[in-house]
Length: 630
Image (tube, rainbow, N blue to C red):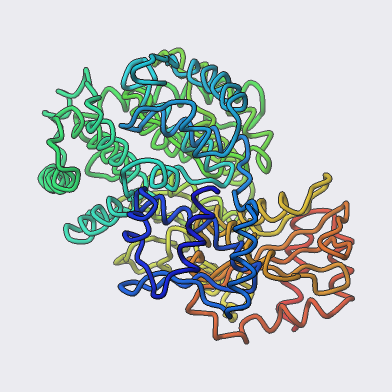
């Protein structure tokens, strides 16, 4: 009987609620392992028409009738397999996290027991992992006394961990979840420390930056705990940097030292400081700093070299586009900075940009020859994808569109994300990114969209950098003087047509991923959707599916739609139109805001019109039109 089956039996026999600590002691594992196991057994308990109750300061118990508990007990006693069927990618992610970061010794038999697979499967996984590590100049080593371990430069190990985080995220998996399950670290606690520090000292970091900083801080503490501190050759450059937040940063380092019960070496603190500095590089106080002189010159040279090459391939006349030159240089400045110091960037929009801006992406690839020429390195696909967005904006600017200034002080990466969403919702508008102090650019524009409060006579609106549906409506009101009630809660990002054959799990995973990419749900949302599917049928008839996840995994209410060119059998019916709801807890009781959706699903004229659509935008426009009428 495996540990998860034991856990169920303990809960069924318990006469009172048990805490995670009490369960951990009975099974001789950590509390984090218990929390992970509880997630894995929850769907099995739901299948037996019961519920796993978890209440803070009370404990955990299984809620259900005695007959239901007896049936579950017999299933478990009969060695019913409750083990999650780990995918190959997930399994190798688990192994890599442990080999790269764990303080414990890693042996094949431990991996077999934790992942419920055979010795030969683990051996095959380790062979592929060894090849993966070679991409980062790392080697997988084995010694009888210490098991498996990674050999190589510490900076390469950090880069490999960051790259693994990106790969897992693209597959809708969270490296933070693996770190909490298999390692002695609680990323959420570190995130809370940085959140509080950010609020207490007005550091103006957005959610993306806070998560990024927490991730690197977590890795830093784990490596220090393993006596593998980082050495930075160029750390002295930071001593002369007039970084206005240095004093506040030192406070953060002290708080992290206290949490990790360790002394953080100066080189490690500088490594984290470099990540923080990269988040502020588009602020005016940094742009003219002497510390950036060399980087700025390199960024200008690369921008000019790239523009000359791209103009030879496509007649975009970018050389005369001063706004494009300037915005490209501003973006390349942190890119050059990251390449110089070996800092890894993960771009969550990579796949979407490669799909929706394919021609621009492949043109942008030629910038790597410019990077090679001036800095001796190649940029990652994530960096290239952001350059592709610059190109698409430059083409849009060539058209006679309304010009709107966009002021975003939260980093170039966030600005680009905002740009994608703005262009997606307002295709007839040219958005020009500039700083609050750029009077010349601001004067050219009729309207201003800002992520911070401004003192200006021009018409402007303040928006969330992640651009919610409420923000979209505010901008429509500003531009078109046409106020409307926000009742749709969907965008182009969450409307898709699948032209290829795809199965049920893939559909649910892709739709969950779209909702996650637009900031509406957490990485755990997909797990909730699968649990909901196991609880009962989501088929509503006429080839339509209406599914959803759980409120606690939703950041803001959003809807995803997809149409299948090749219908599939869901449970008992053939379906080709799937609707996925992500409803925030605060909106759960306000069912009227979804009234238009339910009316639309029962209107076969509209549904059939959607089925005739061949492109995402056609469905999006059909839905917009329907939401206004219903």
